[in-house]
Length: 84
Image 1 (cartoon, helix red, strand yellow):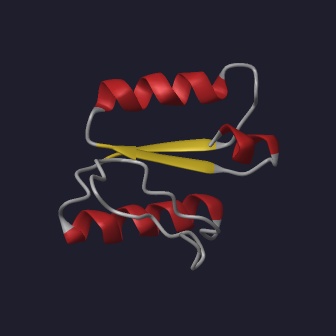
Image 2 (image 1 turned 180 degrees about the horizontal axis):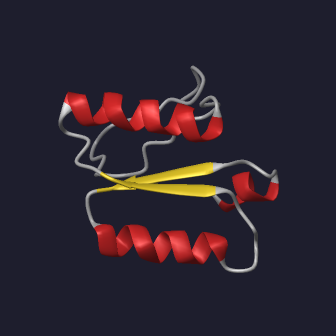
Image 3 (image 1 turned 135 degrees about the vertical axis):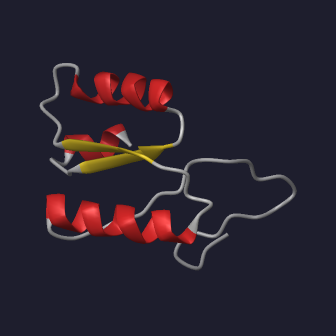
């Protein structure tokens, strides 16, 4: 994620844990001037996903990259742009 901030990307952070959200937000802002927005939400609920997407588009104008870096992956292969 920090590589994105080096490219002057805006970063929207979403987490149901507001404490963790605040910590990551503070780390990103520390001396970088990164454009960030934070949203507390439980993304298990489909309506939360829709609401957050609307807020992010409203704040940044568009979404270029979506990185789901929450949860666990066990015994699975993650594919990026069709490559494993």
